[in-house]
Amino acid sequence: MASKRVTMFDPPPLDDSKAPIENVLELTPILDIGPDVFTNTRPLWHPPGARGVYGGSVIAQCLSAAQRTVPDQFFVHSMHCYFVLAGDSELPIAYHVERVRTGKSFATRTVQARQRGRPIFTTTLSFNRINSGGKKRVEHSTRMPEIPPPKDLPASRDSRSPFEVQNPGTDTASKDIPIDKKRVDHWVRFRGHISELGGRQAHLAALAYMTDNYFIGTVSRVHNIPRFSSPIALQRALKALKNPSDLDSEGISRYFEELAEEEASEIRASTRDGTLTANKLSSIIKRRDSREIGMMVSLDHTIYFHDPLGFRSDDWLLCHMESPWAGEGRGLVMQKIWSRDGVHVATCVQEGVVRLQQDEETRDSKL
Image (tube, rainbow, N blue to C red):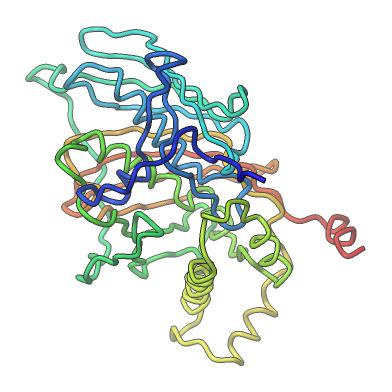
């Protein structure tokens, strides 16, 4: 029996002259359907525990498709997205671009990502021509918080993830402060060197890809609810792996080891002296309530690109996340992103479903 085709066309060999993220986000035109229709060149990643493909890949590929249809010197300044259905990693995605308007200073595009003819994701993007605002301008930006710089470590060559993350140890997610004042900070950079051929568009698409990284998960972190609170929860996450190409056994182990260490760091941060012993861990676990995330998925995602020329995605970017509100089974998170030298690169907003495992559901799951 023939295996399922997860891309419409056979993927070409990886291009070593490009950064891993450029290969991940590569698109192939579907000329038989139309001039502005594209598909993913390579299989898309389905993260362990997620309901579908990584949302950042669909966001970024929609941006990549739209960028192919705008004039030179037009760069994206805003992107408003809605997640409609979970993307299936066992099926190719078709990206349909509509050229809504192209003016002298602004251009508007919509993109629908479709599987089996149904939209799974939709976005409207606005592009601005560089230097169209005139010489006299109103300018200000939010100053980057004082965060320890990233450690000067050699870039990892682990190609299973196109970017790497460093936690500066300044998170207040586990601190005894009001929920709406807690924050989560981390440094992110993409592996390798984004090519000159990819240009500014590749840096913007990479940034879009990264903005969905554990975004809505900030809600659970500020409430100190672990992602995998039990072996059963971990097994559910492992069973969610649909595409064998997602991760091999070594990759799965590394993924969950990183999550476990991240949660251990958060627990250590909640102790007075920053150490973690068996007795302390037992005491902390007893103090924790029994809440467990039942469902956490993104609903909508907005990116405001402030300075499309003022950063490199293959250099360190600081991501600062806060959650001003959660309720009615939803949560809202704000994210600000700065370059290493303090340029305010982007501001993002995401709302998602955040539902706890209910007692009756827990009982039924044991039957």
